[in-house]
Structures are given as C-alpha cells and as structure tokens.
Length: 371
Image (tube, rainbow, N blue to C red; front, top):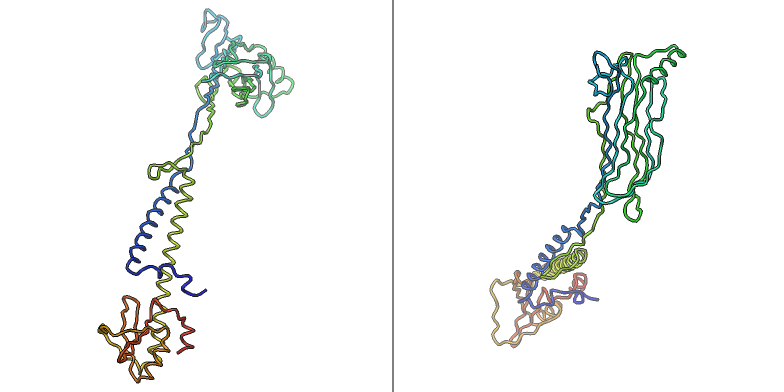
C-alpha cells in the first residue's frame, strides 16, 4: 500500500476542498452540541409516589383520686397541679388512647398491654402488670388499638417500697414510677404485604418521694406520635426531540456521540494529510535545492509558455538528466500558498517540468536514493 491508498482529502478537487472541510466542521459542531445536550439530559426521571401515609398516635392524661381534705374537701378524682401529695392520694388514674390512622386501609395484627415499673436509680427495678396482654387484629383506615383508663394503687406501691427498705436497710431519696404501654405487631397493606413493625417504647414517667409524686417527662406534651410515609419510585423514560421526532435519550447519546467522533476522526485525517503534504514538499524541495544549487535558477514571476507543449516528468532525476544533456539551467518557480514548486527545463520545441507538491508520490528515502 502506498500513500495514494490512504489519501482522503487530497483526492478531492482543490476548488471544493475548503467547502467540504467547512461542511464537515459545521456538522461536527452540530452533532457535538446534540451529543452534549443528550448527555446532559437524564435517561429517566424518578417520580416519587406516596402509596400510603400512616400515623401512629398515643396520647394520655392523668388525674388522681384523693381522700377528702382541706385541700380537696370533696375528695374523689381531681386534676392535680404539679405535685400529687402522698398523704392525700389513693390512686393515680391514667387515661390511655392509642390509634393508627392511614390514608388507605391497612390491617394491624399484634398484641397490646400496659405495665408499670418501680425503680430505685442504679439499684433495682420491678415490673407490674396493669392491663393483661391481649391480641389485636384490626383492619381499616382508623384502627383504635387501645382506649382505657387505668388506675395505679399508690398504697400498694408505698407498701412495696417500705418492705424493700426494711429488708435492704437502704432508703433512696426518691423512686421512679414509669407507666409503659406495650404495643407490638405488624402493619399490612394490600394483599397482606408487610409494611412495617410496630414497636412502641414510650413511657409515662413519675418521680416518687416521701411527700409527693411529680410528672417528670422532659416534654410537657402528653402525646407520642410517629408518621410513616410509604413511597414508591416511578421511573419515567426520557426522550430527545430531534427534528420533531422523539428518540430515547440513551439512543440519542450513542448515535450523536458516534457521529461526532467519526467526523472528528475525518478532521484529524485532513489535518494529518495537510501536515504530511507540507512536510513532504518541504523535505523534497530542500533536498533538490541543496544538491543542485548550482544548476537551479529561481524566479519570482509566473512563467508564460504560450502554446509551447509541456511534458511533465515523474522524477526530478529525469529532469536533471535532460538539463545536463541540453546544457540548460533548471528554472524554479514556487507557489507556496498552493503547496506546489515547479522545476522547468526550457527546450526549443517543448517545455520539460517536474512538479513537487501534492501530486508527488516519492518518499523522502526514495528521493535521496534517486538524487
């Protein structure tokens, strides 16, 4: 394979070459823009869909059942201020309500119960049942898990603590009473699809001293709630509008990138051909001029031969031989802007010439051997 086999742009008529290159550059810029635009566009858009919104809520309130006294003449159930006085109180009454509300119907299966614990900080803790554990199996958009008013016997608690103090001979400054609703189970959606587990660890805390009981939660709110939002992702494929036609973004990225890359390769080939052609001409002309300096006369004017026939030679060596035989100088005329240098030998009836430039196929190594 010789150089002519790999030429692309050198085969195009010089008059149209710059227009072809301009068109390729324009197409490359256009498809590169399309490719970057497609790459910047997402393949899919993820749309979040709220399938259900489920709220677990437990609220409570407390009161105290007291004996008649100067502070509470009528006795009975009262809403205490901050302190519940031990000497006046019989029972602590706690109203509990726990419910699960959802935008779409769900099924709740599990168990509920209520306990309370008595503890001496870092020393001991004991649990007692307030409401026996019972199974639940509910279905709907509003599922009432628990609605109960439960009474804690303060007299029994005091007696229990005093007995421990007598046995241990240890009397802490205060104790803690914690009421704990125990709600455990599973929430199911459509077709008994398991959505999430219920794990209620809320507590209602009180502090007990010799004189009074106080509610000691950090927050004054008497409601515990938790919201679970169940979402699904809907992936929407995106399309690229090209000349009024919608094609997938993935296809657009691939096609436009390949076309832009192909056009870029063609432009690189054109650049390489240009560089090779220039270097070849410069190398060949330099070798010819250096070796035959005494035989060459360079002119800056265009040569007009009229109707005299012209014979083009493939090798400078042949032109040199003719010049020596006829004892004529070699005239050099360069058109560098056109990448062509012509060498002439003027005969009486015919003009001999050799053109060094784009049409020259002699490689530098071959030229050196011939010269």
